[in-house]
Image 1 (cartoon, rainbow, N blue to C red):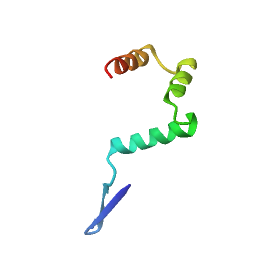
Image 2: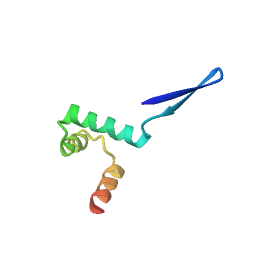
Image 3: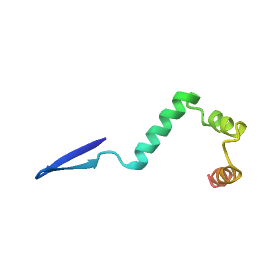
Image 4: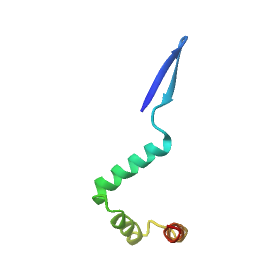
Length: 67
């Protein structure tokens, strides 16, 4: 995920993967590992366990209505 370049006595590290791509990859692997890739199951689990606030639910509704 990183590359480096030696500049004198210092190593300068640079990401090879953009942050949003890395987050997407980690999210997808989590979803596949725990919910068999089914986002509906994941959201249902969060809703049933009261892990989503009313604000979270409103944000999700807004996202869904805009797509």
